[in-house]
Length: 202
Image (cartoon, rainbow, N blue to C red; front, side, top):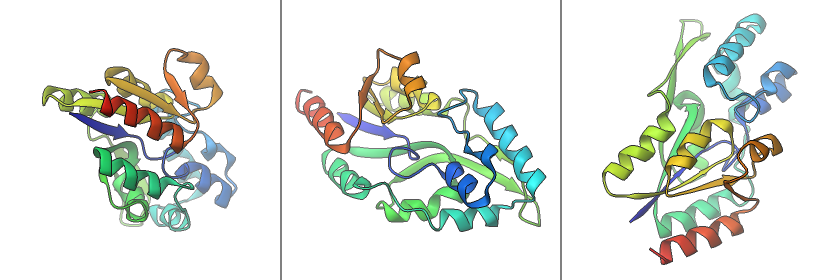
């Protein structure tokens, strides 16, 4: 039996940090896991920028409240859940993701969480598990599931490679160039076709 593990940002909703950068004018926050392949380096950089500019969790949540799902995402998720179980496996944080999940049907989410001080400053981030996307895939496989994995960034690659079928969805060219053997799709219709064929051929 197949189960789908999918990233959140860049697949179903816009990148949160890019939207924060646009609304605050802080260009340094535009960098994401599509640009930097070391998540710890990326997050420590972000925390430093937030501290420098005095941005709190509440400031970021205000930006998130204005974010809408990507066009066609809720409909695709409805279709996907009619075909298979779906687990969102993301390197975002529960404090960011909850309002977005409500807009896409509240799928199961496995992600990380933040540490804040009494003033709402984000002082640290806490990984649920190191290399969690790959670990989730392995755990499901140990339960005799086959995994279809969907992602768009460097931090998805280990999950995509561990899965029985790994698919890059609208990735940047640098990720495509560095992982030319992985399947790339550009639309939800293409995803539907590949997933349908995979499940029907089981």
